[in-house]
Length: 167
Image 1 (cartoon, rainbow, N blue to C red):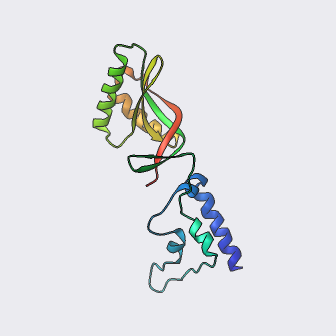
Image 2 (image 1 turned 180 degrees about the vertical axis):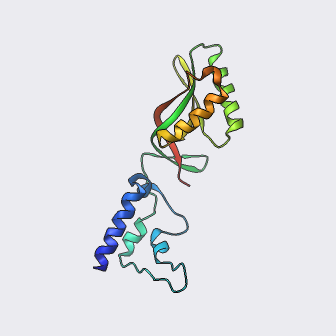
Image 3 (image 1 turned 135 degrees about the vertical axis):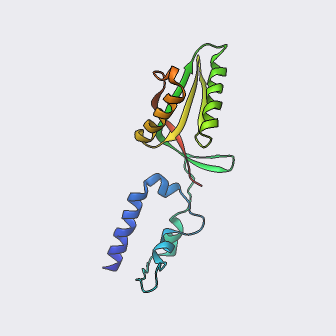
């Protein structure tokens, strides 16, 4: 009975944590098993997990995945998500400068949000953010339309590959 309970508990944790994050994420200090076995209050019950050591070592370790990227010593998960396209221009003399100027202004107001200036011939584009849901992106879209009211009809949410910080 205990073995079945812990098997169900383990599978529930696996499904709730998301397959990519579960397989590719790493906890440097403790595993989920350590958290479950730790007694939080005096007089509280104690959970004991019986399983092979090899399984315990696999949980929480980072496995090399094709959707993992390391940039400046930080590890990111590359997945599907949403970004906001703030600028797109094809005038070769001015478009790059406009994209970079808008990027600088956004970075001053929101230093923690990723901004990406790209060139796909013949367009210079500025994309902002790494959002897992459309709702998250929508909230930022409203803020960006207030910052750049003259281009509010050109600023919209796009589906894109995003980077989520794992470390």
